[in-house]
Amino acid sequence: MRRRNLLGWLTVVLCLIPLMVVGLGLFSAATLVFESPRVWAQDDVPNVSDDELLDELPDEDETPTASAEKKIAAKSLSSADEVESESLLGWMFKSLGFSYSIVFLGLSFTLVALFVMNLLGARRENMLPVAMIEQFEEHLDAKEYQEAYELAKSDESFLAQVLSAGLSKLSRGYNPAIEAMQETGEEENMKLEHRLSYMALIGTISPMVGLLGTVQGMIASFQVIATSTTAPKPSELAAGISTALFTTLVGLFVAIPAIAAYNILRNRVARLVLEVGIVSEDLMSRFSTAGKTKKD
Image (cartoon, rainbow, N blue to C red):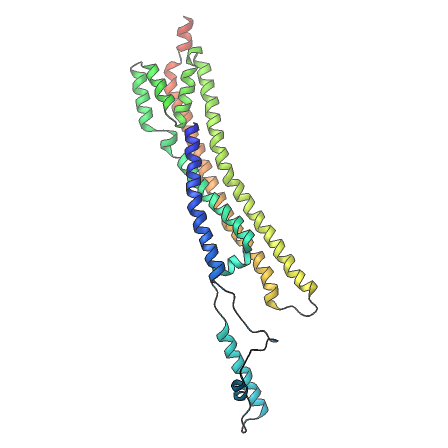
């Protein structure tokens, strides 16, 4: 059992390390490479040379109104050329900030690692190995009870742990053996559900973290409005609003798969545990007269 738990946590670590490296690489690339768009505000005056100023002077044949319209059109075209495109990934990381990005990356990587670990643990071969059942039945048919006990004791599957617990108490009678099997089954089931509960915990925490970012972003936007003596720029308000929306979006992106995977794996584990109980009682049913024989 200890070796199986150690292998499980080792699988989590091995899955978590490369995911962390890839995630941090994407985060660094998004925050260092992508830049925010540069748009001239109405009160910003671009640096122009003397030749450009001479070019902007109105011609003799032009009226002042036509010259002003020409300047406005030229500035609009130049401002459009100055706008640099920004990817959605870069905008998302910029809006989330370093703290929320690390939190959501950690939650998502932990979710993937836990999903892999629970998926491997919920395989039929890990709970109901066919080869082990066939060998156990062969030992029982040959009345090699000690060999059957050693086979179940050396195997790390769910069914083997239940059978070894029952065989170890068989000397006291059939009923104590069944009780020992039920206790071991409940203990093993509790361990499986304990690992699955972490996935449900991530599914619960992620929307709460997103809600925290939503409140923080809205407070930042209203702070701009409250402290501004003039009408605030839309870009200043958009910073807090984008933080609020992106934290909510990413929180839901993490929570929805977590809750779905948790319920799917929980139903699978419950079905396999029920099958383990049926198979184990069927294998141990041939010892139902052990206590009566001993009394006789």
